[in-house]
Image (cartoon, rainbow over all chains, first blue to last red; front, top):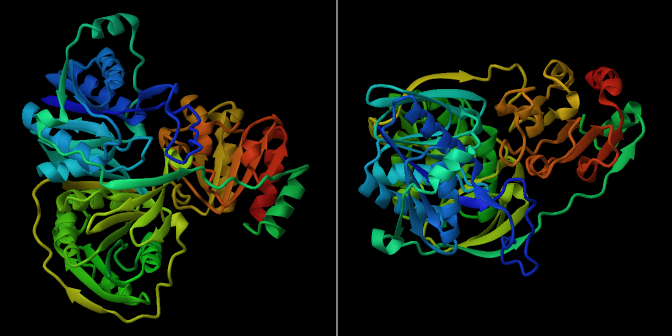
Length: 249
Length: 312
């Protein structure tokens, strides 16, 4: 089984994002960037399938600026075999990403695509589903468990209020949720080894994909600030306030 | 202008998220039709027809639609979409599962999780887990939209009388097959839709102590959540996690016990209407977001809190 894992370079999950004063977006200069946390889980799952002998090869791909190769190196250090960098600048939106990944699938013919359920920057939660629709492949979103079968995978998805199990014939696309696994920290020897693993560079033009921005971002603002609260001195006072002032209980 | 709303139901009535999606459609403005799919769900279609302001309910019924498998539902939405300028659904796990497929097949860029309608083509949506709000404009001929249901008060479920039209349900795409479901094993309400959430953090000190949170939640009829620190420390499973990389919640009341208020946690709960924080560190950042803060050792106040809030 050959596995393709798309990864995205995003502002690190522990950075407090700041909205630019001109409202054009959030500050990303001199900010720590990392692999999207959901994508790390996807890479981890693919590497575990390789270690279990289920997967024959794990290929990671990213679409973004030159610096996004740092995230590919991280994925290679975690255990992916090789990487592809589709160079692109600016805001590449989910439909464009899905079309690009579909073109990558034409080249790579993976049996399984494992990807994050959403990126923590634009929070769109679309790309995996779009890729599945474009390719006509089976879809399993928000998965917390993956069991490989013979020509299929059985997945458990996190749905509102519980869990759902689906069997997906291959090729299939799954998007991962937090419960699936805990990604490893790459060890130093593996980080060194990853530097020698190949990264193929292609452009969206090479792939023949139109990545024009369709959804125009007019402005970005701080969310409405919460009004300053008060300190209460006892449980009795708290309960009284919740009942009579906030009226929430 | 016409708007198609993808309606979710439990077999007999519409889900509250869909009533919020309809409220959003009303703000956009135009004739509102519903599409309801499922297996043997005529009762739900009849219930959908009672929502005031709905023009028509399209009802697609078939065994292959019973579990709302995305590959089977999306083609029906897509087939109807050509007659509409908007296709709207709740940003529920089902809406998120299905709508991007529709958008991709229509060749349009979906607008996810909107919290506000600015105009017919301009919407506000949270990015970076709500740490910033983006105003976006779509020039696509059909706007595929999912709606953050906590931002729109649900419309009434009764009082209207729309026509129900049975439509071709299509066939099984032969892709994902439903194997089984395990819905809501916990007794409490579901975390993302509960009106009260009680969350515990590292201050609890151990998995054994987490029962304090569960008991308080039980007394209030609340859902149980946790900070990432508590999850990482192994107190509770990952699906309890509220935060940027966990679940985003916006209940009427959020009670944070022993949670310091890391950025990544606050991103998941700061849209809550009322926030209560109990923490022994008066400098904890959670107090900046809390409407009511109690500086106290949680183990000293928990028994009284449990007792008093239970009677409440």
